[in-house]
Structures are given as structure tokens and as C-alpha cells.
Length: 71
Length: 462
Image (cartoon, rainbow over all chains, first blue to last red; front, side):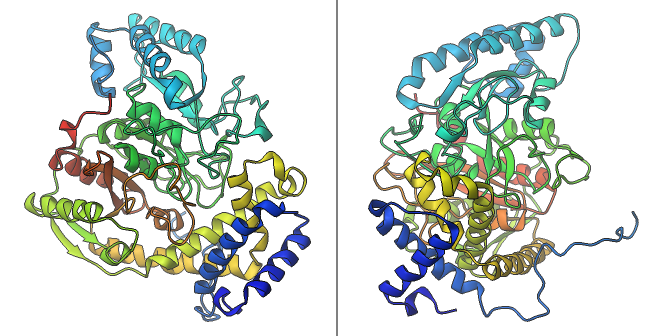
């Protein structure tokens, strides 16, 4: 995914608006600037997590169905 | 007898030698709340009648040689996200302003069964995330060291109540640092136990896989005694760990001679947010531990930004799942700060969340690896002293001054302990981290820090 730095402010706003519309949330106009700034910051953090792992790197919530040894 | 500065152990001794009653401890505490809270806003509800009834029962039982242990007759208070049967539990939110739980949280039950005296319910950031805010049903708690400054959140009322000497121990919750942050900024001890160590049942969730329950208190010993009451397996809490509970008190004063302590210096050393006084506090603590016989060495962990990113993505995604319906239908009933933070969860994709969980595995393995070589870690709690209300920033933003979320991501026990005051008279703390379920070592090292720093001679704000 492109990082927030690679999106123009307009593209970032469009993306955010689409996501909010999909979620059924209306952010009041007077809050938009604050929320958009937070979204850009969050998106920068999300970018750190992408393209980092191989297919063998499993998430932390992989569970086990069999008892552990000794149980 | 001035009971305001008696430790939990000290109150216990006084109760048992007959020099004080629980009723006296409770009335004194209620008087302090009445005298101080109007300007500090720690409490959203004072349960005076319940407190006096609890105290009467505690005294009657001690008189009949029924002793429930170290918490018998001790006043305490609960962050207002802990369910209390028949007592309003609001999460500091308009959305739950009329919520009267039908049952106690497990923590409330345990404290009651241990003979504790419930003084009331404490302010929090809304739903343990949104604050400090002035558009909620109750005002934000203020920092007793300087009321123009925040307490940190979200266990804001807990920190204020203890720091202002209203109560010796109050329960907080910690999803990204909500116990350790306010502890650091208010000059208190605050422990986030190992994930699964204390039942979360009956505590309103912020993020299921990051939420931890724990105490804030005036001293490390107070926290150790309290955790001994609270720790234990709860089969009805899906995350509760069936691991034996340790003795958290016996080794408190064993010192640090022979221990190995790692310092993940890159976490904090290069941060533009870190103040020279906080960095000096960490270095001074390392020197003191070294002089007391510990081996203290710098270590490398994955970059801090990765911990923060994983924590924020997990928290926002899980919180949004909890609040999805109200976000759609009652957005304006949340405080502005809360709503502005929660809506971001709607923008997180499935792959973002799963990548954060893959990071969690990598990061947990890395911290476990470090703790295979070291008994504990020493790092920053907060990179600066408490800011003013006007200068307060989102605790989850990439430039936030708290450095607590790594150990919510990994689940390791971590404690903030005060080490001194800044030049403008605000507390500075450091963070001690231990192996999973080795809270005893976290308390032992933290107690050494408390002694070596000279913090015990620093009186609380009056």
C-alpha cells in the first residue's frame, strides 16, 4: 500500500471519506481536520507493518487444538 | 493518629494492634475526599454509606478474630470502568451514564472478600481512551502536583486520588499505559501485571488482547500487597492464565546484587520528545542499580516505532469492533476526543490488523529473548513530565511521550516507579519490566529503585 507520504492531501482525504462512508460514519465538518491529521499519522504507522513478513511468519493468535505436552 | 500517610501494611498493623479502626481510616479518607476533591475531580461517585458499612463489617470481624488478610479494613477506590453491583458504573461517558451493573467485577469481588472498604468510583478518560476532555458528564481529574497539568490517562482519577493522599491504593486499567502513565506523571507506583494475571471480567473492555487490570499506589509495597489479593485464575475470563500466584512481598527488600538488568536505550535516547531530566533520571537509576551490585547493560530490541504501530493498530481495531454500532448511531454522544480516536478503527483493514499480530509475535519473541539474558529491563515510562491540559497530545500518536505500550503488545509485567522531581516540581518515573508471571522480580527491582532514588523522602503534594 502507498504510505501516507506518497498520497497527496486530496488523495488521503478521498480515501478516508470512502472508508468512513463504508463504515456508515459521518465525521462532523468541524472535526475533519483533526481526524484527518490523526489518520495520516496512523497510516504512517500502518506502513511500518507492511512488507515486513514472509508467508511463514504467523500472527500471534494462531491457536492450538491439542493439549500442550504435560497437560 | 494522622492516617493519611499510613501504608497498607502500616494500616494493617494499626488495625491489628488496636491503635486504629477501619471506621476511623474510612472516615479520615472520606474527610480528605470531601476537603480536596472539589478542585481535583478524582471521584465521579463517593460511596459513603457503602464505605462505612464495609468498615463496620471489617471492624466487627477483626473483633471476632476473623482476619481476611493484608487488605482487611483498607479503604480503596475503583476506576469507573469496573462493574460494581448496584453502584453506577459509567466509563465516564454519556453512553453509560445510567448503567447500574447487576454484578461486581471479579476485582471488586476479590477486594470485598479481602475485607476492603470501597470509597467510590474514580474518573477515567472516556472508555479508558478519550481524554482529558471537558465535554463529558464529569470534569477531568487534575494533577495534584500542579492542577494546570494533566494526570495522564486513562486511570486519571486513580492517580489523582492517591497522589492527593485521599486513598492509598486505587485500581486502574492499562491497555497502552493507562496505569503506568498516570503513575509516572503523579509520582506513584503502578503495575501492569502479566497479561492474564488478573481477571478482566466485569471491566469494560477497550481492547481485549491489550487490556490489563492492576493497582496504582503510593509505594511499591502497597502494589505488591494488592496484587497478591487480585492475582489468580478466572476460568470465566478467556484470557486468564492458570499459573500459580507468587509471593510478591517476601523478596521486596532483597536488593539487586547479582541481578542482570538490560536497558533498551534506543527506545528513548534519540527521541525528540525526551527531556534531559527524564534521560538523566534513567541514567541515574542505572548508576544506582550498578552501585547496588547489579549488572546493568544496554541492549538492543526492535525499534520502538514498531511496538507503537502494532499496539495502536491492535487497539484501534479491537476498540472499533466494540463501539461499531454506537460509532454509527451515537457518534455525537461520545466526547470529541474519544470519537476522533475511535473512528480511526473504521479505517484499519484486515491485513493491517493481521500484520500487527504478526509483529506482536516477533516483538514478544524479541523481549522474551532479552529476558532470557536479563532478570529485568529498565526503560522510560514517559519521556517528559506531565504537560499542561493545553499541551496534552493523543497518547497513541506516533510522537506521544508515553513509552508503555510495548509491554501491552507483548504482555510482559511492567511497573512505573518514581525517581525524582523535575526542575518545575513534577514527578519523573522509570519503567521496570520482567519475565511473564515474574511480578515478584519486577516488584523487587522497583522497590530497590524506590529506595535508591530517595523517592521515599519526597513528600506527596499537600
